[in-house]
Length: 519
Image 1 (cartoon, one colour):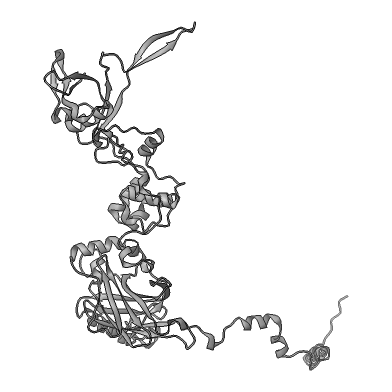
Image 2 (tube, rainbow, N blue to C red; image 1 turned 90 degrees about the vertical axis):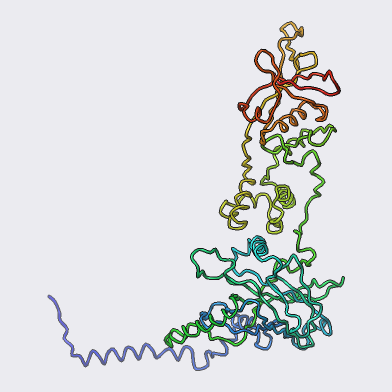
């Protein structure tokens, strides 16, 4: 039997209200009015630690210097992007050098001069890796010009402005922080000069104007870094920056108010933002022209181990005959180093620098100044092409992988003794212990020719036979029926690859010297 309880809606509602009030009645009794307060909660250690970690506004550190470029920023830059300033080629722009120190900050600089280095550099990281090659190409197309100059007559408060022929994109000067100082700079390169030209109208690459400021050290040199700041710029042909600024302003005026809120306003001046010092900033101009690194002395490479253009092997083995009449003997370890000359993963940073110099990559020694052998070998072909450019990148990749060039002609030669006996005799032992001459062993030497000339072949044969090159009068090749054919460039050019010859020496009956006969 099922029971059905019937209740009206009013009874149900009144019962729920009563139960809810009863459930809340105990809250106040348990905690009480003074159970806790918000100040007690904030006094907990976790909140004290977090609050103490926030520096007060009065202790916010400001940079000791400020550099202001008197040129308007572009209005077409989004809020969270870096500002961009347009400059005209060759026009003088003022940069105000401001002392932003607090009264008790850096007191040792009071009444002292500081040195600032201003430079124009690439903004893109890809172009920074190939800066040397890019600037060399610009120098080739614009001989006698500089990328950056200081307009000395218009500048105020600067002392001893200097430029260096090897640093076309930098200049330096001294200035007194207690006096009003403004330096006027001129940028002579335009952004499109470093853009691959295809169809015209290419977008120019951005540059950066950077200031690095130094204090005088104990030895009198300005080497103590104080501050660095830079800003992003683009350089146009004369009047081009004004047109570009006007175009950007007109584009922004056509945007809706909601779109304009996403962009920065245009400011009359550009404040350079703090940055890391430029890598070459610590190097004086007199040293900047050459790579600065520590390496083992180059005297390790003696005359016997330095390859030359007359090398006798595809691995550029040294040719003792090319060093005059003196005989040069190589130790086996020296010969191994001479033939291999391969960069190994265990090579140290100093060994890697020495290897770069040895293989004619001295212009990249500074770029790879912190690379060991393992670091260099990990670089891919695309990495090296991007860093060093197509030509040097491929050459460096092939050198790292030891891709030697195959010789044009290989010739095997063996020297006969004066009695026309073999050069060496191999002695074999019989079972009863007696020694007998079993057979003769002719030892051949491989000559690798690249020029395919008679002079090259004679020079390398003189090396193998340990003969002074000046004592060889004529070289003949023994032909059919024993005739002697004079060796010529055409004969060497037409020799079959891997030809074998016995070299016989004959005294010249009419005078001093020797004749060589190739049999």
